[in-house]
Image: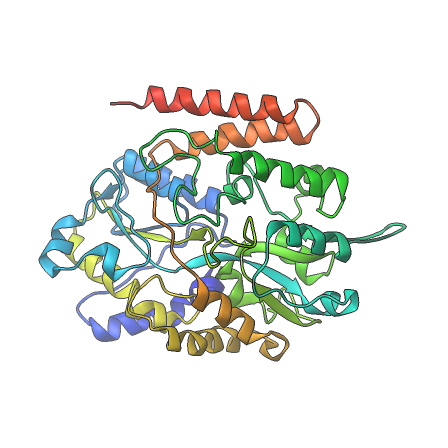
Length: 406
């Protein structure tokens, strides 16, 4: 969606700096649907359609397209320019020892809060908190009055193997091994933090009834944006790309005050600032006839272009902490009611973010996600217990690991 990427300003800025290169934008989904975009991309690639630059919006999609041979390595261009990706960017996109993409935005996860609801409940905006405190807030913010329901929290996932961050909540605030697989490629599902994540999900939905029910969310195709802006939930755990909409949009007006809290920790003594993150992966198409020009656009877009775009916090390491507040101001200024958003809370979360040790996605990441999602649904629908869910998830993931060993 152009509202999320501001192409109408970004592309002309690039073409002004590089007048010999013209950009022809093809948006694969008008509504920003990743699944739809990926299907169209795969269809275009299989039919031999010529492309130059690809943008993939999650690590599983990126790894899968690399495995399909749709993206070309860009190591020779990086070597020629003479920089280290791990130093130039806060996200290391290396996959199988090569660089097939550079990262664009840096969107660590945070908690978006309806500040009016907090004030009514006598709760402060957290600046450092734990999952136990998050759960307590959700309980205190939940209101059920006859047919009127307001849940304390909304979890937008997992969904069809997507938004799998909700299956690793308590893994997500660790300095390393935040993923379903460890850095050495072995399963991480035997971690007690994976079990604690599932337990937290179950307790909030089944015991506290403070979480929008999974079956309602799936059957009614509920989405985090209307849930938050229509005030049927008080807290949304989401990636910070949401910042560009927090002040309200034409589609979702803002009629209350908003603040942001950092990603919760497991225990009070844990270091703060660590959180899952999402980035977009900009890659050169394998069948591109203009690979050098494609690389130039990718390098510009993932650095200066992110500042021009003014919609997201860049993954580019050259952005200084003191510039963060200005970027947040620019992002919010493009919304309808930026004055209703606590800008300082966003700046504090973004400035305090720490990048965990990156674990590149495996080429079969989407299959891992699907397996865990399916086992979780059997659990949440009451068709198996948590011990069975974890064992079956681990067994299925181990089979995938074994099948993909070289």
